[in-house]
Image 1: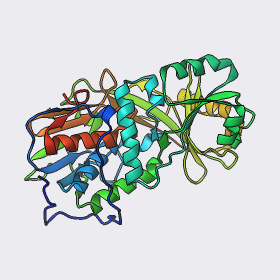
Image 2: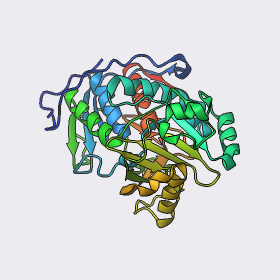
Image 3: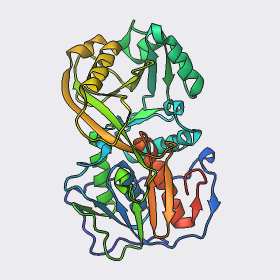
Image 4: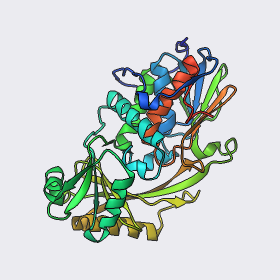
Length: 366
């Protein structure tokens, strides 16, 4: 059964309005379950307020559980790699390097994003390549699904700003994206409104917690030795000279790139993927790769204002697949790799199902 919010739980000062979202069932393709002994309803503490912890807290609080979200940083998202993400919801594009499970969970996550966050942009994705790199586009088409091959005229209709620059590409209509700098505060506010107690600047588990859900990413490596860090570097630029409606990926054998349109004429440029735990500044080499490839996508990016460079280290297991690990009264949700925004909502739903019914997904739980 669900546990009501404790009477002394505090609503944070930033808690505001939020319309509740119904959490419908997972679609059949992602619903292969087997049963364990159900856990009774409990007071739940969630460690880590990155994108994974936020969705765990919101999902469980909306379901009526007593939730405390604990974050060691004094300011929201100050230590979260989630703030450096492109936040593309691209289950089909991610098929290039992950298992079909991620596609299925990602499609479910898009539904949950749309039901929960009004800023979810479902404009699809566009995948392009320079004429000399056409083989990369053909290869990408072979290893992914859900796309439509488009010609230059269709590209012009989708993205008028790219008119005449590309002869062919792939359009994935079902994909979406959000802006992290807007989505993260929205989720945090919604968690407070849903009745959760949010505690910043601490790592202490409150007294009376019956169940702890650990969403700390690499900070949980002492308990999860297989975790490794994958560094991602990105640039944010601003220009009025380029207009995009959807994320655009430019394929290249050495320097693939994605550009994500944000509000206020800003664009997030990313794609670097480095096997490293280092959280320091963006390197000169990475900056040159990002900016020169953006210029190749559209020369007008050459006149853009550089707003910020940043780098985050994402947690990953050796197979780059997410896991929910149950250890008595601790549940670890980790290893989301570069797909935090894509997988977090569906993983939160799976965790809730386990807590309430004992159901587990055989490809996720261990």
